[in-house]
Length: 321
Image 1: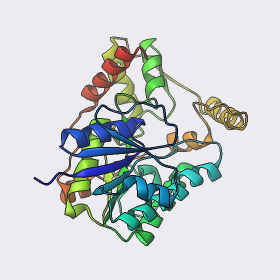
Image 2: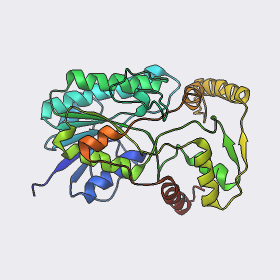
Image 3: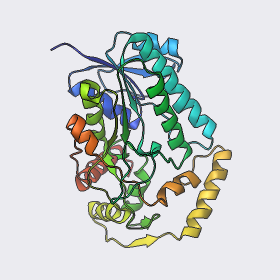
Image 4: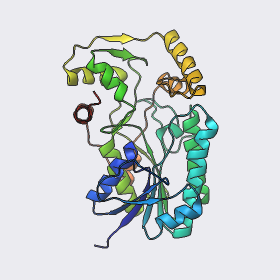
């Protein structure tokens, strides 16, 4: 079999780490594209190349690799301009680098680029996008540039909410659950599509190697949506705690979110701001995942209980909970 190689941005991050190790297990040579002076660890056996987010530097860093996976992104900021500088301008430089080198391009976008959906009317790839947040708008703009400007084979993947080992986004829920506190900050029956990091990374590797993925935009998520109540119940079971949920009043959430917006201006990253509250109070964030199944044969396999348990084991080993 011909040896295959991939360059990966964002390899020091949560999802990027899982993508890098999954490519390795599949027999690929993995090159991490990192910022100059990077001190964050990489998986063993991953080559490191430093580069700024400029097309010429990126082209030199990725030269000779078959596929470029762009997973680096900024998920939260108090400034939409900052989000666009990283997520949009950075993607444009990645596209130029791929065009210069001929590397196949896989963009890791987000369900946030398309917007809300419910179990009865899930968000689909061909829907008119309605992103609710600056982050979602920045990822949608990045997708638009890929479709318009990439002259190489490309694929756009839109993962749903990702959880798993190394994740900090769900960490606070685990820490609260460890103390027996189960706070409902969204209506208990609101539905969300989730995906474990191992499944999300497997989808990336499949998309990078399958000609059927070329020119496709694909949602990546578990086929069974979950409610906040179901997630908290599973956390209670994992921690062996009685499940006594408490609903946080909407007025309190609005006040906390407003304070979060002020915190950004003070240089402090808050747990909750108005953007995050908009997603929590949407009608739901459910996406249809049948196109990924039809095009790639991909199905997320990790059920919620097993995924939460694997995440908890990793958190405990690291002393995070």
